[in-house]
Image (cartoon, each protein chain N blue to C red):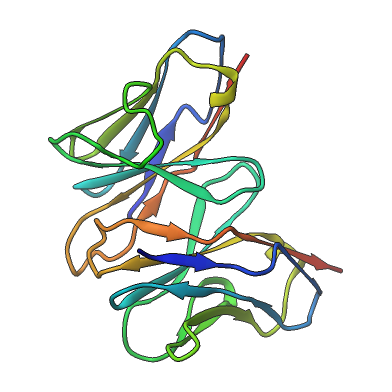
Length: 115
Length: 117
């Protein structure tokens, strides 16, 4: 079985400050990890993924995430937050490289960036 | 590329009626499509996985006779909510993927907001 935990329901950060949204995972095989962002009444937008290779993954809109195998974590980070980054963020894991395998989502973390 | 559309974007219906939601992959052929349900301020819950030309695989607790899924072509999957009840009101999101090593992510549709009166 695979699972994802996002321990924070909400993260508050001031504009211009660095942000971190936490994610830990559990999977029996090799983890394939994803971050998605969701704006109100919209579907999910892909931010970045870790499949293999460098542990630091760079994605869209200046976001990056670091894969840490020993801590089974894949925290999302951005050096300088923007008000427009305010949204709902989901971490997801897939057990297996095949895109036909199911994704398991974390509970989501609401990011609030204040001016 | 890799655009997934959903229609309608929002629908309001009366209790007891049926509603069909379409999910289309616009610029690629999707061998697998997924249907998710999202409650307000909650995560996505996978309802079912459908592979083109075969019956959908439903997650535990999802009534297959209530949520009919058809994946008749490589670019279209439909979810029909039959005999809708107010508790079926939710945000339904589909995603599509092309199985294989090179295509290793799911592409999500914009979602359909269903309100059952």
